[in-house]
Image (cartoon, rainbow, N blue to C red; front, top):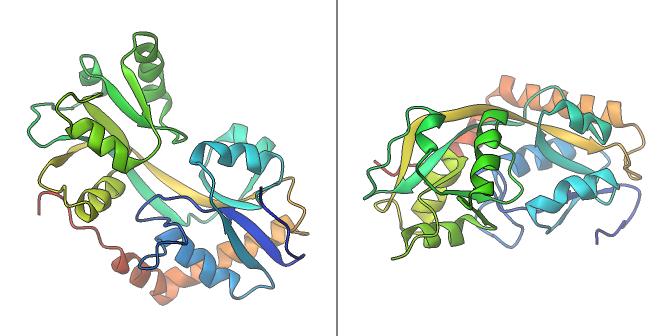
Length: 245
């Protein structure tokens, strides 16, 4: 459970979502989102404490205020427990990955019909994809996983548990490269959606006194990072080499 250290310490879930967020124990990389957050918080009276929790628990802990800050894509229903910044902290492209020796092609979501889908628990997908997932779940054609590493292993095994998996394309590229699997994993060209992610604050936060001011300061800082070119430098540090290259 997150622990309140002092009035100037705020908590954020320490998740493993390359190249956007890396856990603190990863000494080599910080992540695009963390680098931006840490840079912007350095200009405030707040310090960030990262708390390791499964992705799936983040909404619950943001609802009850055990986490103060997190990064979410926008959904209107989340405004009941979150306050959103207005300037995206990063943007993702969601797609599919398959075995490189697979003949699976996706030109529309209808092409998912014959395949078992692997999903990372806690990730949010588009309404159109979710409708397909719910139908497939009733047929036993969905496999839930809790880490990209284990899901790659399941998909590449002699008896794969699923045929295709959905996530951020950059996450697929990064993880395949770091695991030495770039020749075995193919990221399909089809794009499910582009998503913008924002700094959010729990409406139940006990450690941020003025939530609108905090978010305005974060927005101003992110905007300034873009204007000075510092944001692009951060992106360049996490340039992903695609599996096909």
